[in-house]
Image (cartoon, rainbow, N blue to C red; front, side):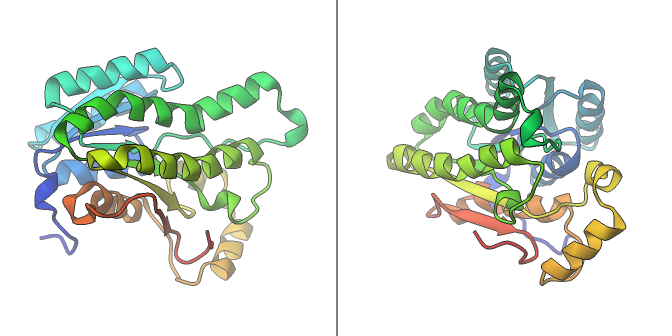
Length: 256
């Protein structure tokens, strides 16, 4: 028996998650599957996505994976239509996919800027655009846009990424205003430094972790499951009157 909450409203709820094959996204997919949601997820990593969906479905979940490059808006919206044809209109959209590849300002070309914005911001807008009609018809829904503490902590070598992630906050608040009369909530979830395989292999040096230990008031490490639990709350009816807000899950590190 889990020590964590179960949400009756998530049982059978159609949910879409981007970047769901690994890392934080995988944790979110697993969490919704455990709640009995009808989960559709996309990722560019086809083999990993297929494997995850097969594992969850073998255990009794209702999970559908489509390999998709989210920067191809037409392909992504087509994948969303496929999920909705199978599961019904989406009632929770989790805009998780991103790429925090390090870069220096002097090296960024206009083409690289556009690509960074596409993978870290643009897809979230057009996914919301695609699911909105179904949510409006249902008179309810939840959009969870992912920000990042990186722009709050003045992180270097991430300038285009932090520009996109800061923009998520403004986008969520405007969506909250525009969609609110239809019963649709939009919020920004802001993860701290989450110890995914990617982070551990690329960035989590002893020196960087020592810095984190000094900056983060709560001791210990954050993992995808910590983020997933907040996503579940924001998708469930328990948060039905919460919209246009920022939720930091970072051990107390940053201050939005």
